[in-house]
Amino acid sequence: MGAENGELESARVARVLRDDIMLGRRLPGSRLVERDIAAELNVSRLPVREAIRALVGEGVVTPRPRSWAVVRSFTRKDIEDLAEVRATVETLLFVYAAQRHDAEGLQTLHELLEREERAAIAGEVDEAMALAGRFHEYMTVLAGNEMFMELAAVFLTRLRWLFGRHEDLMAEAVEHRALYEAIRARDVELVRELVTRHLELGALTALERFGVGEA
Image 1 (tube, rainbow, N blue to C red):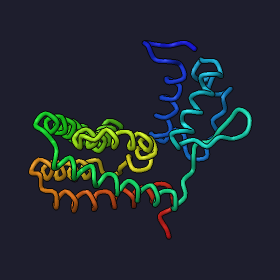
Image 2 (tube, one colour):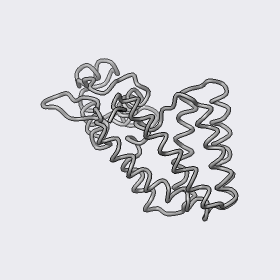
Image 3 (cartoon, rainbow, N blue to C red):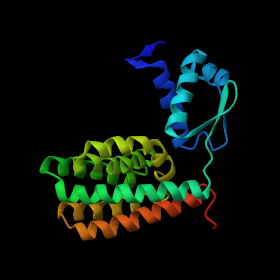
Image 4 (tube, one colour):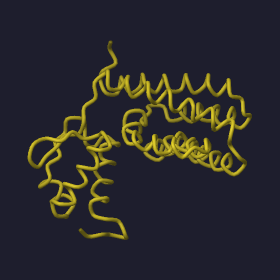
């Protein structure tokens, strides 16, 4: 199994497929055929098989018999269940971030936010969305709890895919600016209020994007 710039072929294939799924280039229900992907990426079928297995573990691909799989489709219940888990975990993370952050961590969060704002203003969609995701993920660092990091890692790819794409990049950045200011002020009650509204809107957006917005 070869490597390029120190990256295993299977990891590279997984990264390419993951990005394709996240960015909507491979839609829910799309077939992932080992032979076709191997030819497309100029690799053997083994790293493709390992990459697909990794993405199955991340919850964004569903295996099928023999040598293919499909990009996972989510039902309304799937999205609601994950949104419920997300709300519980992320609300705690944001609260702990407000209570426990230090100057260095807050500075890093501010830098992420400013980069997100610049990308949103410039209309750099993929960059703005990626930085918005990193804003959320950085709460695990500010919270200072390694168990939260491990728990977040289990759901990270699904969270990015389901809740990480936004029609209004500036509105997302504005909400993150308000959250940053509340965290900086250690205003726990305001953080709870803002993050609850923020996550509820994210869940509604995900339901609409996956075509399951109607009850």
